[in-house]
Length: 279
Ligand SMILES: O=C(O)CCC(=O)C(=O)O
Ligand SMILES: [Fe+2]
Image (cartoon, rainbow, N blue to C red; front, side, top):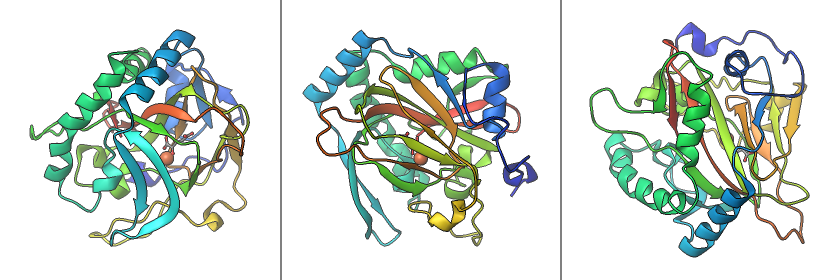
């Protein structure tokens, strides 16, 4: 494990609040010095409406089950999604994952073409704040591009987990990153509930060289006594946070009529400063 990947500069954030996207704040987020960045009005109300209408017409591509290495369900939580997560392929060869990318891109683009391309828009925002190149992650040996841009319904919430490719995707190019953040933009959101709590307790599991540590769900003890920050999504806004920090999503309370509909991906920082998008 490179030193940069396991270093954590401080045990607390500089300030427990949301920041704007600037070049400096983006690096502070990667370095886990601030809890979150919010881009207000990332999508217009019209774009949110057309996105949701397209989703209702086209339908979700998959129902997401959290399973362990033996294929056993880890919890009752299921959510619909469009796209491809490497998480679901973490115990499979890279080729199996890469072979699914074109189908997932095509399905996602049916939605984007009726509203806006959320991934390209976020790449443009991030490129404006990063001196080195920003783009969708691609394997150096030419075996293919990774998938970026999960569209999902997370109305039922999500258990405590962390996302960090150097632990869970070591055979892919993103296994080489030294920090990972994630962004999500909401197209629709419940009026109550649905907040995400991020705990300043960077995930550092112990595991053997041929193992993949389980990231979902994590034990609540890991975040005991660590400071946390809860963000509350607003439709049209995009929020970024450091996904190596364990995080959990509160479900919408009974009676809420709006779903928690979002699009997002991870962004990994290579030692050279290049930023890679994937999901
Ligand atoms: O829905 C959210 O607020 C966070 C989703 C999540 O777990 C992630 O983006 O890694
Ligand atoms: Fe996550």
